[in-house]
Image (cartoon, rainbow, N blue to C red; front, side, top):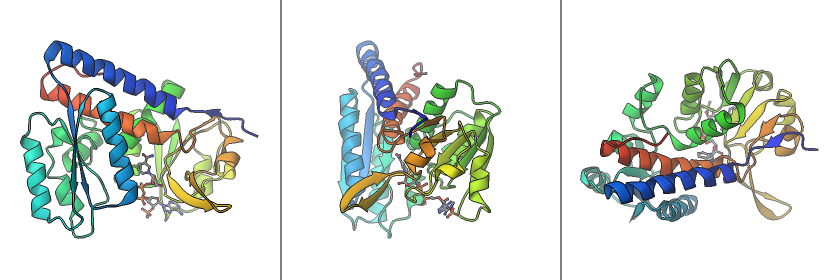
Amino acid sequence: ETKAKVIDGKAFAEKVREQVAAHVARLQAENGLTPGLAVVLVGEDPASAVYVKNKGIQTKASGMNSYEHKLAADTSEADLLALIDRLNADPSVHGILVQLPLPDHLNSELVINRIDPAKDVDGFHISNVGLLGTGQKSMVPCTPLGCLMMLRDHHGKLAGLNAVVVGRSNIVGKPMAQLLLGDSCTVTIAHSRTKDLAEVCRGADILVAAVGRPEMITGDMVKPGATVIDVGINRIERDGKAKLVGDVHYESAAAVAGAITPVPGGVGPMTIACLLANTLTAACRANGLAEPE
Ligand code: NDP
């Protein structure tokens, strides 16, 4: 039986997108400015193609310009870098996103670090990573930002809470931990070498799962009343049907937790909403205008 409050990421994301759209409309009316997001997709990874398509649709729906650059899987590094240089120099482009993963022959770090940090709406450029780590104004990675927004909305202040982040990737786990630390949580980062993961997780008032392993966080690992944020997106087959599940075993965790995000409908929609918010922020900063809150 479900006891936990279900945190509705889909509804929250809709609210964020409406706020972005309203701000974009004001920018156009008062400043003649339309924020623009360029998304670069190299190759034909089907999941990436779906993400890029959704990003384009939602960017346009919010009133911003969307520029899609689809490059062949065998595109050379020089050609990709040349495209980024052009986008960096283009004043109608305020945000640049290179969809990961890139094909093996391309060096993702080199490519990401070529993006103008002010246009790096994914927040993966080394200088944004450093700014976040030192508590300075930066571009914040979309997935952890979406998680933080849901946590703040649910808890109000997060100060003093014990947060456990399972996963230490550069795109989710590490920036999530930095954001929680920034909000004065006591943060533990767990990973594949952590000893007695279940015990570590049971100490969490806030448990964020970003592992990439279907349903590995089970109810016995959740402290009663804890808030569980499930970042995982795993495509599995069950009873002969394709199914999307998180890194959390929803039923057992929801029976113990105080609040929980579902998959789908939790972290996923918030990620794209935060991408739009970051693009709007970048456009405001580039033009010396007041930033959205
Ligand atoms: P990575 O594969 O880059 O990182 C996974 C992390 O989990 C690693 O740090 C790894 O540890 C850790 N891990 C793996 N196995 C275990 C284990 N048995 N016990 C404890 N820790 C373990 O994944 P990402 O961070 O990129 O993504 C995580 C999940 O989030 C995926 O399901 C992905 O699809 C999803 N995702 C969802 C997004 C959204 O918009 N909702 C956006 C991005 C990702 P170690 O470092 O030791 O190997």
